[in-house]
Image 1: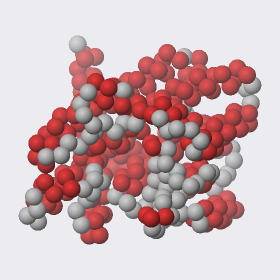
Image 2 (image 1 turned 90 degrees about the horizontal axis):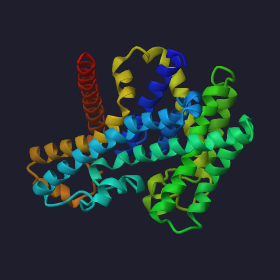
Image 3 (image 1 turned 180 degrees about the horizontal axis):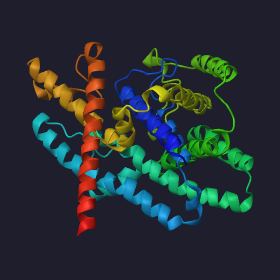
Image 4 (image 1 turned 45 degrees about the vertical axis):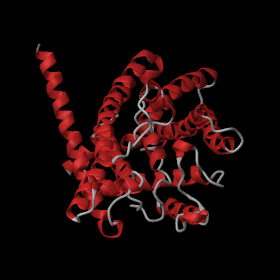
Length: 363
């Protein structure tokens, strides 16, 4: 893949993490798409775009790379947040997570990833690992049966669209949740693969006609939205980790598709103007660290606001992990500070890692 494609994907990753953080602050960067109506599907899509065919014949290398890039840093973060959670518990009197056990440290990350509240966004990392390993084996089998892109697309689409009806017909045990999340995410991974191999630079899907159709479709989907009143449910938004889709059946999948298309359009429009903005490139390179650290940074910002306003830090324990101080006035300040701080934390971590690697190479 060319450098331009990789740089565009990097900017798409930057947009995706901006959408995740803004979602946790309960506002949307793209007005017609509520928070969490497609953001995680976009990350799976990007992973599919970046999937390399060479791994179909080199399973061991693919698994090794995914372990090193996803699981190893995950469990370092897991250890870090265990100690952070213990420290905060002493300050606030509240333990932000599940009891510390071997099961919760090593197994819960693969079931729901919510063993520690401050690192709970990282549930996506272990799910991505399971999804990509599953995708590799399923894709290999499909190619062996019939090497036809339309056959593959139909197969993965059936998996994706069947996830929500299945979630409503079986008991949502931890294993069932993993299965539902995996079959739904497999569809978006293949959609990314399909886009990068058969659509990008071959079919123009960003014409005015496409734009008109997408606006019409999303306008219809908006009729199913409920975000304007929490009492009505979540509507276009959905909570994939818990397979919470409320009374929807196919709307979450459809709004994920339109949201991915809208994200691709945004990047296509802004890329020529922002491709040389180093901060955005850095952001796209460190989405893992932003995902891992943004709730902790928000927590610290809240603690500072409480201190400035003479409110005991223990007040923080009376709210959930996403609570921020005076959101009407501070939401956008939280957003800007969090994105800047977590991006440069990630850049700093990458530099340290590179220095350690270079030192090891010299030795």
